Image (cartoon, rainbow, N blue to C red; front, side):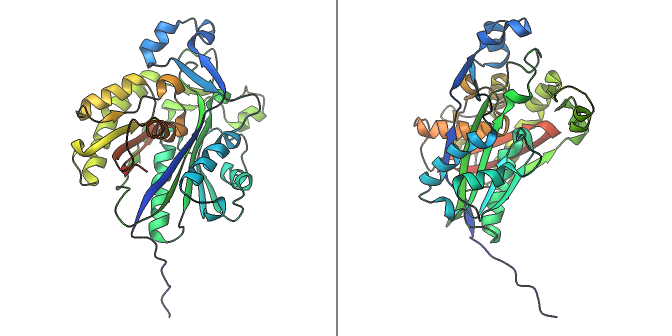
Length: 331
């Protein structure tokens, strides 16, 4: 019997570029406080959030993702036809099928690209980076477009004191392609599936069909807060160790923008040196789930807070309870 021919790709992969898109509507804390019997001070103290963006009525994750994707492709020096595969990280695509990736491929004129969605919520982007890197190195793709895009405002109960003020909408994108040197470190990922109920929809689509209310996201805030603080810093350290670097080699720490207190506590536990820039996009963007890391990365680069070529530690964590972390070289 003849052996099967194995595909081979690039020796290494890297993030070639990033892009982002934020909806026009800015929502200050004052707009939300009455419905949750709260105050601007209480929200800032609890989360560090000053404002967030909400999509316009009828604006979808695909609508938000398209400009972010096109910006990333242009910055990579490519055209949409150069994209072999599109991976969209989202939990708020409003159609069961087709995938948001397929619809986005059509919109950006990349109709031949392989397409898939990743539903890992706040860890979705770092999951997708790992998948894209493996595709490039394995030979199944040369240029992979990864898009994190969310319209969290569609699944948040405005009267829920535990979630109404936390989340926002937006999109971020990255192009992953071949590299002659290592630029995406090993991914440390996994889950604590015993706690899957900590972040979940309160109704299924079957229940909604049978008369239940529109499914809203519910979160056991204190449980998730404790898990993120005590369990995720060790995961981040494992990603640093797996990349074969020291923490002082980092230029930036770009965690999922879950909560300012979580971000600050993780940085403290990791003992990040003062020179490491910490992404705190949550103050103006809120928690945008799968979009938060690429949006924060694009902002750091666009504002010149970090330089191209620096090393960044990424870690996403959330519903599932799933997580993924890796060290990357910034584009």
